[in-house]
Amino acid sequence: MDILYIVNSCPLLAHGISSVITDLQLNCQVKYINSPEESVSEAKIVQPSIYILSLFTAEGLNFVKRIKDISTNIKLILLIPKALERLIPYALEHRPHCIIFTESSIHTFTNALLSVAKGKFFFDKDVQNAIVKSFNNEIKINLTRRETEVLKLVFQGFTSKSIANKLNVSVNTIETFRKSLFSKFCVKNSTTLINRAMELGFI
Image (cartoon, rainbow, N blue to C red):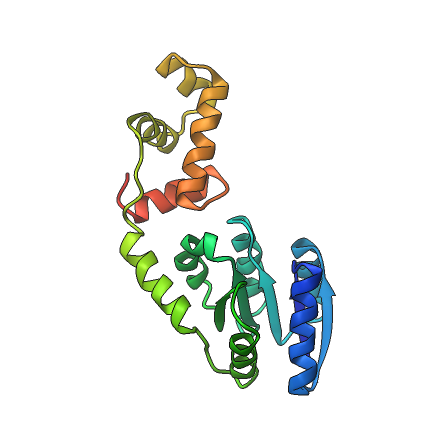
């Protein structure tokens, strides 16, 4: 029997997923887990066949990586709001079996779940269009002059305090620039920021 994790989904969304599973009469045991952190711990003990994660922030990609680190055989279904479609190219790096928008119809999700249960990949037309759009726009990250200066100094290993002294601004101002850079590059720490910026040719 397959084990299916539903993680970080609001009650209404989780209920909809559960209804689809019941209607499809899939032979699987379903576990509802509110916390992505908890789901990683659970997956180390009982490895799921299918892992459904609702991504509402860029930080959620960290849990996708950690799940894949447990086993590349876990089939990932990622639910992403259309407002966060910019996360798609980064999500694809973890080779999910499926990405669909949280706003997708029940019919779309049914087809997605059936495909993934059979070991196939599923990306509907809306997501495919978003993938093309995201890749076309991926290198079009617009940085201000100040953000570019801060990015280069972060790359050189300077702390926020040192950068603030160099640019004659407050540490809080530098922290604001850091947060802006993290958001634009869809990362959560300076190391990943530097790697991403190098990948995209900003450094």
